[in-house]
Image 1 (cartoon, rainbow, N blue to C red):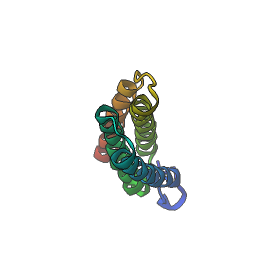
Image 2: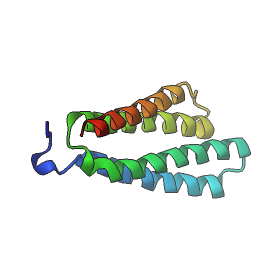
Image 3: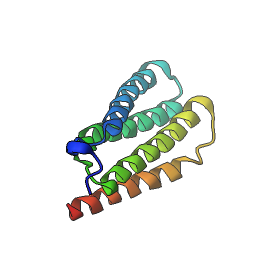
Image 4: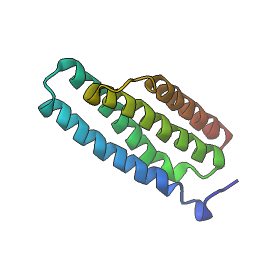
Length: 122
């Protein structure tokens, strides 16, 4: 079932992907130039890497998500990325607990599996 008039894809996912990628570049620059602690720098760089990769993926895949399962996959990917990267970066920069990182990572894996299932069904 096509959930988008004209099959135009998920604009929200493309926009969110662009924002994630932009934030990742800023976080990565901050990690490289503004964080002295090696452990904190590594955490922020990890968060940046995952945010950038998933941001690019969301932006690239948004137009292909023309069915509910594909849209759900992208939503789960976005939520997982925000939870994982937010938890890791928050832990490194602010000392927050990182207990949401495994939930976010699991959601990212689930999102990719949902995307694969939608691809098989197309």
